[in-house]
Image (cartoon, rainbow, N blue to C red; front, side, top):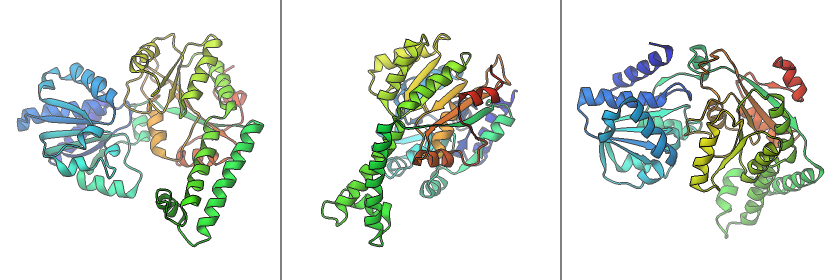
Length: 400
């Protein structure tokens, strides 16, 4: 057995020893789905289960990924398996299954989605995820519903060669003059609202969150100003024009790599794709504004060795078995480590032809803005390196 098979069996055995109840945390590429299928097979053999529900966060996981993995590993179990998205299953009441497997379980713990657990019944439960929840409330809830029984950290997974190691770099860009004016305007709006609320001795975020939806609240107008200013300045950072130029420079400097771009704005990725195509670099866009048939065609194109860049807007962090990708650029960071873990998972699969090859992850951020703090927060505990430009990047990676 290779390391991946050993870890999967260890995870399964640990879960089984806890009366077939609990959450398994494995990094992307370490085989979480395989653990789920092994669980179904074991309970069919040992407990003669007759029904299994797999709860997933996305349509693609429901219609494609789990279906293909079951067909690959254990087609004989398909007759007892039902697969449904959490945004449908949380509305159910009084349903019963012998086993439920909750993929990306951290995404099912919100006040709305957790109704699924309260309103339905099951004998055994397996949670699967790449990371534990960040919020204390959700951690406590998970400990009650489906406690963590087995976990392999990213560092441990790299050491065990379950996933590839990676280099992490942070590169700054600057605003254009117009963007700088916009950012300062929205920041001033945000800070004025903060001072207005805090001057009343109130907890800013809590009050602003309540007041924004209550037209009779004394801070209603200020709260709307607070949220608008904060959101607007974030989007100025996310759409910064120089991030497109810097992305193009990086991609052209490393012609041997296959890239994925993580953005949060559809116009940004469409514009970046057009720039890449105009330079003779095969690239696809993928985002929610595209029709389903176009998205499917884009993924098929992405699988081609000729396609060098996948430009994604909030769509490919999780839930897709993407082709071998060894480099990523994040152009729109937030402060949560969960997003960072998910995005790094896209480039973490071992290259069987070059198992010692390191992946490359780059964060682009606008200098002297809140975005630099978001990058620092999401990189906490990681060995990222702040550099100034692509020339320095090439020198550090021994690329001429």
